[in-house]
Image 1 (cartoon, helix red, strand yellow):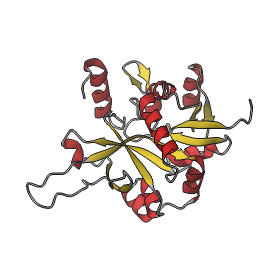
Image 2 (image 1 turned 45 degrees about the vertical axis):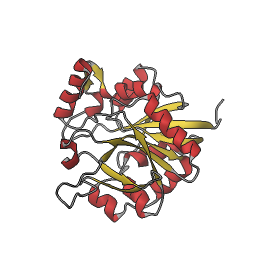
Image 3 (image 1 turned 180 degrees about the vertical axis):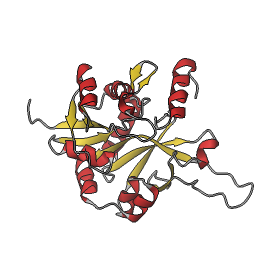
Image 4 (image 1 turned 90 degrees about the horizontal axis):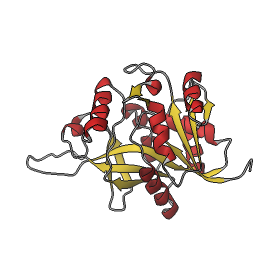
Length: 249
């Protein structure tokens, strides 16, 4: 019924502007638009009650609506995807808000359900993210791959585009983890986040999770064995289509 409170709202921010891949959300990957592949993945989550694509372009909204999806127009000047998710969530009562990256065609219902379960079971955490062990050594130095370190309780210590931890002594080995996929927020924490100014480390690394850490807030890192390919460059497109065809990265 109208105005009813739902448990989980999923928001998929999708902006048309992209310097490396023009009109990226409508780019066809193996014959299907990127934004629709993301929508397909979120629809597979049993924990999600409502899905809204938050966009600044009517062409994206039209593509989503043609597939029976829901789209909402949002201002162009919102600085991050989480700010765009907060804009949408203000008009919809929910317990959790999922911010799903609009360039992640491999997002799955299983990934999402695992994150929502983690928030249900950890009442002291306002944000949960996925942590995937890095298997390909070339990803460690790549600045497009966001590395993360966390404590023994899977609480985040830091996120960086640089390799962390740094192996100072030759022969020393360490496991490296990367952040992939959506952000799962408690609704009230998301609104707090959106009300804060961007922080120095966030601006330096261009990583919005650091706004939370610099404010002393807890981020829960949820381990996963499932990998992902976020579409940001032509090489990402080739890698994803190779995965669809051959089943390997």
